[in-house]
Image (cartoon, rainbow, N blue to C red):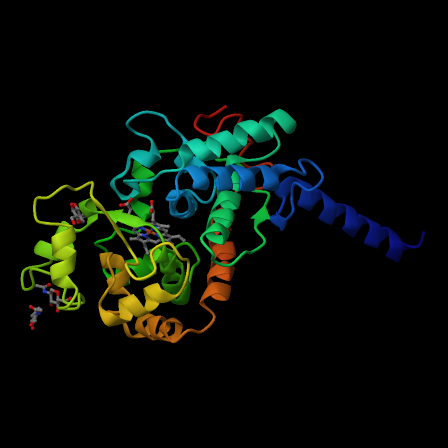
Length: 319
Ligand code: HEM
Ligand SMILES: *[C@@H]1O[C@H](CO)[C@@H](O)[C@H](O)[C@H]1NC(C)=O
Ligand SMILES: *[C@@H]1O[C@H](CO)[C@@H](O)[C@H](O)[C@H]1NC(C)=O
Ligand SMILES: *[C@@H]1O[C@H](CO)[C@@H](O)[C@H](O)[C@H]1NC(C)=O
């Protein structure tokens, strides 16, 4: 072997070593080690949806909440008393934990200790979008589960009351663009919000306006009727009242016309740049395709790879 070849061999070995210790996300990460993982998740999500048609939005939201706190590392799943991450205000109403745990249990019987809970959440979100007739994309896997979960860390979470500046900076801090803020908020094309999140927007917006001026005058009475002052905070309303069960771009036209339900969606129209993006999608361009791409990008936030993190045995507790 000449020197050149030895150098080449060394380089290849080095890259292999880096790959093993650092790992990387890839499509089909478990194709050799747990070939049925994806199909198990898919069937658990489908069955759960047959029983409860509100499961897809719940599972989609779970992935978002997992990724924004400590990265997509399953930390949101930890049930560890009053200080758990998932007890934070912004996580109110999160569901789907049982379905993730169920998929994990089934996967563990086939290949114990191989598939992370963080990846199950990412796969379930992908399957949820497809079931709601949204885009079907290939999901990257190879995430490892994190070892911390704390209420204090939840402040990275975007809040319904956040200004557009705050929303933009919270997404930017996670490496996501203004355009991705808009397209990912498009997830609100399915699912519901509790009236719990509405009073400020409908009755005490700020010192000068009692309601959010972005609400169309035609829509305000309807919203107030659905979420009356001092009414039931647990009552739920669809976030896309036009096509509530279909994953489509209607939400963008709702925002444009002042028919956004959530305050944070309405804020997207406060800013010149995000407004342009809303307008673009409202006209029907590439929403599904761009949403899928943005989901893949969101799924990369702060992931733990290789020798970082670990694989939990059950999703709700540290090993
Ligand atoms: C931009 C910042 C965001 C804010 C402030 C926000 C806030 C909220 C709030 C307050 C709810 C109602 C929760 C409830 O009452 O149960 C909700 C629901 C939901 N969010 Fe977001 N969200 C944001 C972005 C996202 C993103 C990026 C995704 C996913 C990619 C997402 C997916 C969902 C889904 C699917 C629901 C419906 C949940 C259900 O029906 O159970 N949200 N969001
Ligand atoms: C956001 O608004 C809701 C009412 O709509 C209020 O209960 C909550 O405390 C507000 N959150 C923050 C962080 O200000
Ligand atoms: C209240 O909100 C409106 C609309 O966003 C804004 O124009 C106004 O300046 C705000 N008032 C105060 C006191 O912040
Ligand atoms: C909101 O407040 C602003 C002043 O900050 C005022 O010009 C505007 O007319 C108000 N809008 C509504 C709908 O009350």
